[in-house]
Length: 306
Image 1 (cartoon, rainbow, N blue to C red):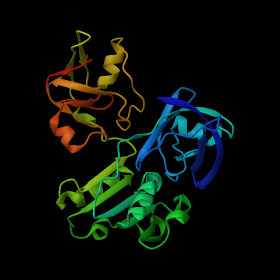
Image 2: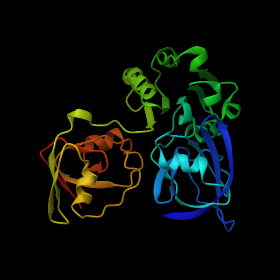
Image 3: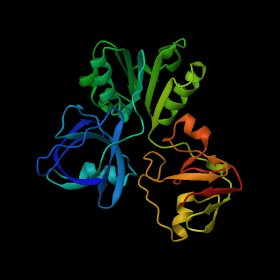
Image 4: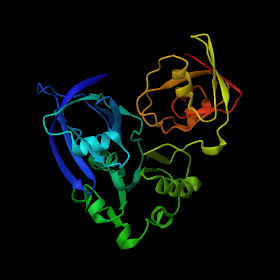
């Protein structure tokens, strides 16, 4: 579900980071949400997902942080041409990066990856849990919300002052009962993932800016759309979603990067090859769901409930 919201303020929070506040034009309260939730923002027909990063108790305003992506249509418009008073279509909150119960938490953020972690910090503080935050960025001028998070339990780590975040030493020895949350650029997430391989299963929770791509290993396969009674060939250089759309079949989609969950479909048979950032490890192993925009098939034929 989407709703029309109005931009009530814009302010620069760091170099190339704009903070935008959105409210209902009629002054109505907005839907409740939980830490890690995101919304889809539609600017002239192009949609991009942004984490909600304001106080969860604020029912009349949503806050998002928008990092300028130099090839990003939506982010550039939000920075340069969307002004206060502009009305935008915004989807209701969806949470694919939820905060799980744990005895203690380690939060690791890189750049704009701090945004989904801000409400999580609010929640763990409220619950009285043990926590620590390691927040890195290219420089202090590139790190938004520093004044909001700086304090006991927080380590700010500008790369131009200290180098890259020392992930191994920050995480230390595996500790049962700990949940590790990481959001940021791929090299940071890859380093944290490698370090957490020795930790108990289910310790690490990540949210990527962009998904892991199949790359040169992509292979063609056949998708059988059982409800539509169509068989579609998916070449190596096209996504499953693109092949389905090229066959004239309409499928709901949004991000096309495997991060929003809109294009989720049910797998009836075959073995999916997952490249999304939506499904849990258990869901991946179960093999009953697939994100059409980025994931593929390990088997020659993939049967879908479409």
